[in-house]
Length: 199
Image (cartoon, rainbow, N blue to C red; front, side, top):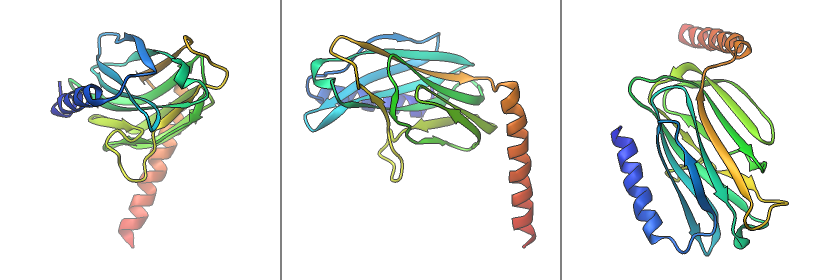
């Protein structure tokens, strides 16, 4: 377990203990053998927020089943995550998927060292390919209240108390079409850097 992962877990525990009664609940977590913590933080002053800490030791998918309460109806439900690459794993692509709801807002994604070489998505699915692969970690949303970043939002439009939404986050292998985009993106990036160093 990385030091960053341990610090984030301790912070989440303290925040959960200090939070008011939760509305949105994590009814089930599917870890697929990965290091996962997910806590819902709620407040009288804003919508519920799922704060997750995920450590990927290999290409895998983790998911959270989120059950709505009456106070969640008509609200956008926020989420953010600290994603760590563990045991030498390189995150080549990251996928964020919803089942049972749509994104109200696609928030920030900030890799520690890699560049986003390709991005595709729709109202329920977002996919990012990195070049080179990310070997340290990725902030999804604004888990540390970073200036200029924004949390992701899930729409609860059409949902009612007791309904469940599944949020899945996956460390994935790029699809063949993404590899060609990655190669073109890397070539353009190298050419731009070479031009900048000549001037």
